[in-house]
Every structure is written in structure tokens, then in C-alpha cells.
Amino acid sequence: MYPNLKAEMARADISKSDLARAIGKSPATVSMKIAGQCSIEIREAFAIKKAIGCKNVSLDELFAWRD
Image 1 (tube, rainbow, N blue to C red):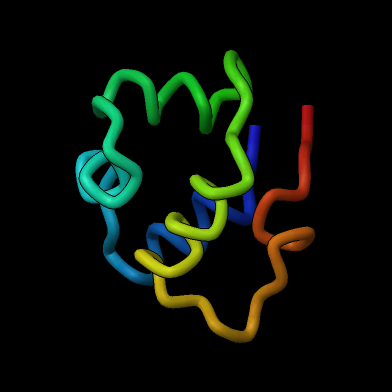
Image 2: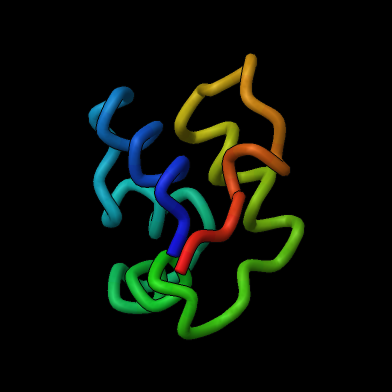
């Protein structure tokens, strides 16, 4: 699970459907990626960061893993 990603999505009012469009995947796939059920590719991580618009947050911080 990526709590920082979820928090940044909420701050930016970005839905899973919005992220799905940003990375060219289905909303179901995005849900699985956010839940940690499948991996997030580096190009997807950059696209997600750009879609959210969190310029002051590093990828490491945005995708910090929590159980």
C-alpha cells in the first residue's frame, strides 16, 4: 500500500480513473498497483507523479511502502 500516494491523490482531487488515463491502464489495474498486488513500472511512477502534480515530493517519498 502506498499511503503517501493516496494522500497526494486526495490533495490533488485525482481519482484512480484519472491515473488510469495518465498511465494507459484500466482503473482496476491502477487499484491493484496502488494496493501492491502488482508492481508499478518506473515510467508509470513518473506519469503518476506528473498527473498528480506533486513537484515537491520525491518518487521515494510518494511511493514509500507501508503494510
